[in-house]
Length: 298
Length: 142
Image (tube, rainbow over all chains, first blue to last red; front, side):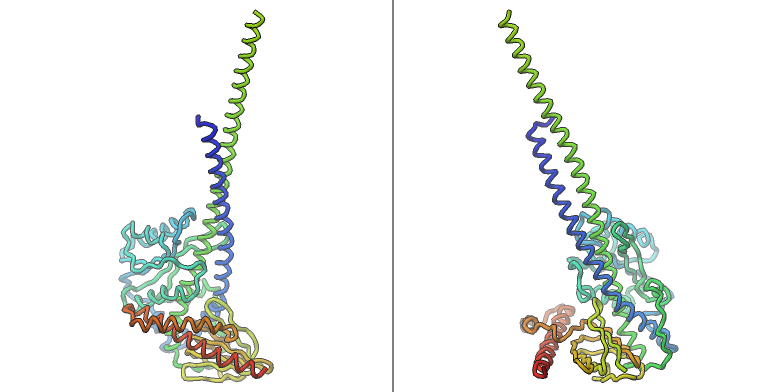
């Protein structure tokens, strides 16, 4: 049985702990909101860029043959961009995305290389002997598009150089506060039919008028596809950030609840011990007094 | 018939409104778009976009992008667009100085870094230029 002082210290430290986790929970809640807002701020550009892209890609002639739109017959190597967080204390957030990614790619017959965004994912992949081609960490909280355009560019360059034949992005999609799902999306070669579904199934431009193109269709596709790919990466990171903060919020709430519960149990134990000590002391006094009275009387 | 004009960058809507004339730095040089322009898709260069309506005139710096023109609509997908009235000259000047100093210290080995500094220099030069030219011109006309 620990002494009363030890117990008091323990109770106090647990109460402090609950305060810290409660604070982290509140901070994460506001960060979720910001990240979600940032995701929806990318929507107007994404929708418009998508419309233009599909319009261009569907032009008869050479436009469909753009290198970023062609499925390669032989896939020799795969590149996966894995988005995780720099910091822990987010429950199973990082473990889930890495496990989901490995389930799909670890047993693949083709060699797979990874680009990691976030320190946790990088460490876990390296520990399992995965080849990490590049890593990005210390991503700002709600980064700007410019902060992340390098990631997309790197992927596009590796693809165009022929180093890899397919590019995927693995991230945790934010659905709502309690639901975040690890997902894997194909970035390159861009499949305009499939991507259209995930972007709301937008139709091409209604106008059937003949367009003027400057410089030409291929030149425009050269400009717009890399931008769109970079935007997809950007959106993935923002969504992943929202998920990270939501996961952290939930795990901190659980921590706060358990700390409070534990604090209550300890407080109860302490009170019981204190009461017992007082009772036994009183019994001692009473016993002593009785003995004294008996000896006086006798 | 006014032209519905939208300037969107990757992370926000920069401008939304109606215009009688939109001037922009297209792939083959500056172009002025009037209502009923033929449908057109073009890339953008570094430069300044002017959006003019009867009552007002707005200027934006843009670092490249893509434009879709329809007879009654102009959609600008801009990389890093900014309203000139919002430019903080002091900050842009500081950025330019930083970039110049970095280049003076020697060309960095890393090509990515070199490109970044150059981009920063170009961007800040454009912003300073635009802010000086248009914010002052505007004040005079008021």
